[in-house]
Image (tube, rainbow, N blue to C red; front, side, top):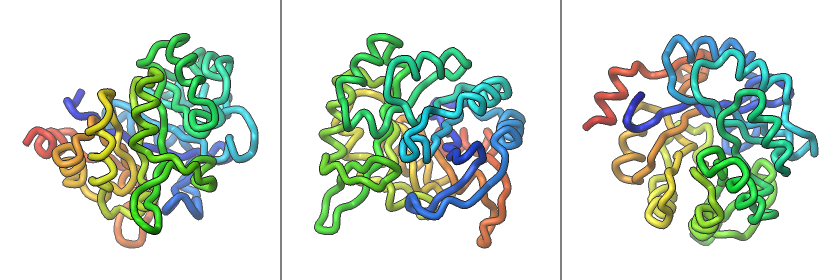
Length: 254
């Protein structure tokens, strides 16, 4: 396993894989099981699956799909989407998923993160924070797939979530999502300088050097990538892929 984790972040909608750009216009990528089989061959250390419609549709996680994912994966899996109570977390974990990400409900009920971490252990609970730049400067946390503005500052919110027991922060820069223009180093650095739990940077990875930048300059503990590991070329042809381990070790070991 790499010292710095690099992991695909895959979006689920109606049981299939999709990819968004700035949290909009989800385009169909394919079947999640086919993607997992390729990532197994690539010896990926960890996968993140986020159901982008569970909360919006007021429905529970897709347990059948998650059972299939857990049965196929050789690596650690984090799942997020539609998580609002302890029983839901328990059921997700019972399927073989190792970590559960809480997003919108962490904003609505911060104490839930404390209860979940006490019940299942901090290492099991990830708080997923979606943040976008405000028009007049600064950032704010958004929920419900980026559709609702919370008015919360992502740094202050991340600090609170760490205090509540979150074992890890998944920080997504909404303005970079799907653009492949590089991570928002400023946002990542602002949060990593304020919390003492691992942070996974997400949103904007387009080339392998972006991983080094967000780790070295942003102090991220791990990197997540979406478009970079499902598309190929200027025309964004669907091609499930992942950088060679030797190249990652070379880039991240410098």
